Image 1 (cartoon, rainbow, N blue to C red):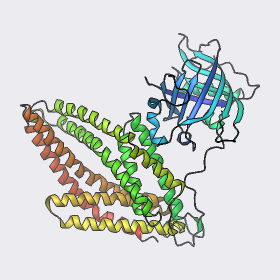
Image 2 (image 1 turned 30 degrees about the vertical axis):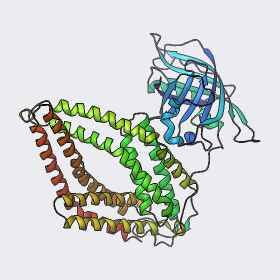
Image 3 (image 1 turned 90 degrees about the vertical axis):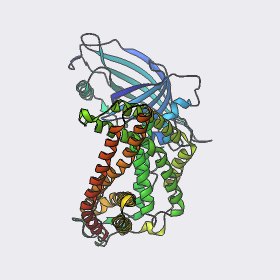
Image 4 (image 1 turned 135 degrees about the horizontal axis):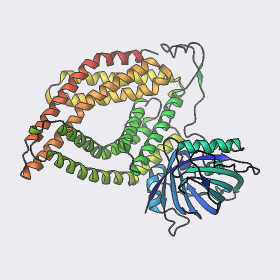
Length: 528
C-alpha cells in the first residue's frame, strides 16, 4: 500500500560544538518534548548516471524510525517535497515494481541499483503547542555517508557530518521561519546541498548531457535588429542552442511523465506538449542535427502523442459540453443530459487512464527515452552545428514560415469540409513556427517575442475550431446512446449546432489575425 506525505522542511549544517537553542520562545511553541534517539540505515538507489538525483528525486530503503520502508521523494512547489511510502517487504537489493513504477519515465529501461548508504544517529526534539499537539520536529543528525564503488577495483568513499533538519507537522511556515532564524543565530548554517544523498555523491554527477560547443565571435551583424547587442561579443553556436533546448524539453517530458504517474493535474497535456515540441525542434533544425538520427525519434514521439490524444481530447470535450449544458436555459435541456455527460466522462476517463498507463509502461516508450538520452550523450550534429546560432535560427524561422504560408494559401483556396482540414494544417504549421521562435527568442529578443505571441493567438483560435471537431463527435455519440435508451436527444443536436457556430467564429477570428502573423514571421526571418 502506498501512502503520500508532503514534506516541508529546512536543512542546516552544524559543527560538533553546536548546541540546540531554546525553541520554546518561538510563537506557538509551549514546550519541547523529551529527546528521542533513533538509529536509521538507508540504502539509496539510482542509475549509474544518477538520473534520479539529477531530477531531484530520491529512492531509498530505510530501516529504523517510525517511517521505515521504501521512500520515493519527489520535488514539489514552494520548497515542499512529496513522499511516497511503501512497507519494507522482503527485497533489500532490488526495489519492488510498485515502488519504481512512478519513476519509469526517469529510469527508462535501466534498473535502479544501490549507489549509496547513509547511517544516521538521530535525536528528535518535538515542538509542542499548549494542547500537546506536535507542531514540528527538529532532528539533530550525526551522519555517515558512503558512496558505493562504481566498478571493480574502484574504492567507496566515506564522509561524516552533522546536520539539523526542521520539518513541519501541524505547524505553519511562520513557525518554520522562526525556528530557522534561531538555529542560525545559534551557529547553524543553511545547508549548501539539498539532500544528504547529494552531499554523499557530490562529484559523481556527470557533466551536462549536451556539452556546449565553443562560442564563436560575432561581427556585430548576426544580431541585427536586437537592441543593445552591437559590437563583437561571444555568440553561441547553433549546436549549443539546439542541444540545450532538446535537453530542456527532454526534462520537461520526464517531469510530465512523473506527473502522470503520480496523478497530478495537466500531466497528460504537458507530456503531449513536450512530445510536440521535440518533434518540431527536430524538424526545424534538421540542418543542425542529422535527420537520419532524429527522424526515427520524431516518428516515435508522434506515436506517443497519438496514444495519449484520445484520452485528453475526449476529456476536454466532455468537460466543455457539460459547461455548455449548464449555461443553457432550463427549458432547452430535455432529459438527463448533464447526468449522461458526467457518466460518460467518468467512463471515458477510466478507459483513457488505462490506455495512458499502458503506453507509459510499454518498452517502446521506455526505449524512446533511452534513445533521447543517447542522442544527447553523443549528439549527431552536422557541420552547421558549429555555425553562429543566429544564422541557423533565422534560417529555421524562414523555412517554417514558408511552410506556414503554403498551408495558409491552401486553406484560403479550399471550401467546406476541406477548408477546415486545411486550417488544421495551418494550426500545426503555426505551432512549429512558434516552437522555433521560442528557441530563437534569447538571440533575437522582441521580434521573436512578438512572433511567439502571434502564433499563440493563431493556435488558440484554430485550436478552438479543432476542439469542436471532437465535441461534435462526442455530442453525436452521446446523443445516439441517449436516444437508444429512450431519452429525448434534441438537446444534443442543439449542442452540435452551437459547436458548429463556435468553429465558424474561431475560423473567422483566424483570418483577422493572419496579416499580423505574416508580418511577424517576416520580421524575424529578415534579421540575419
